Length: 295
Image (cartoon, rainbow, N blue to C red):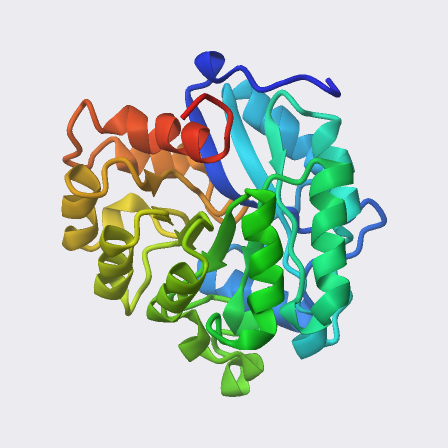
């Protein structure tokens, strides 16, 4: 399946938020302690971590495409990441359905900037994932600015985890993970200082949903993905904005494997979303943002 382009017209949906949780060698993206806390939070014990090849088959069967990434939090956790090159190469083997994003710990400084350029130019990476709480940095910290500058120049999106996280939940001190770094208002500074950078605020941003909506309505290149929650739990103001002011900037995401697109879509079908808005959220907005169709 390698080297195939994504045929957007064939797709039912584009899932902009899925996780590569395990490497070819069996190395996990999270430490066993943090993974266990996440499983408790999502009631996902016994959940098998699919390989990227298995993810491709899963999404191909559903006529969906998926953005795939891991999280590099080596500085804060000491846990080695899954290599971005491996994720990109595995996704390239399934180029008809998988879209590789990378993750670079902002603490890596200039080495991280060089890596970002190499990953886009040589490995076909289409965007970057940040998880401020796990990576232990504030999005408005100048330490990350050279990395943002490179990503903006490369013309690909930056996706930021926002809101509470299940990772570390229930552990003493939350496993050392600070929720404050995932307030979407901290990303507003990034949108101001990098005005051409496409930014995705991941998840309904509990407890800062209104902040996320404010930033996305005020900054033209800030989007919101709807991953990590079943749509039946979406705050009413999120549904209202998705149906109106933000109908061109809201994106389907599942958070697979902890939430499946099957479950998400079944619950999304019960929301009061206008018929003309549904295809925008499920596919069209993401296709435009990711450069899969002409803007």
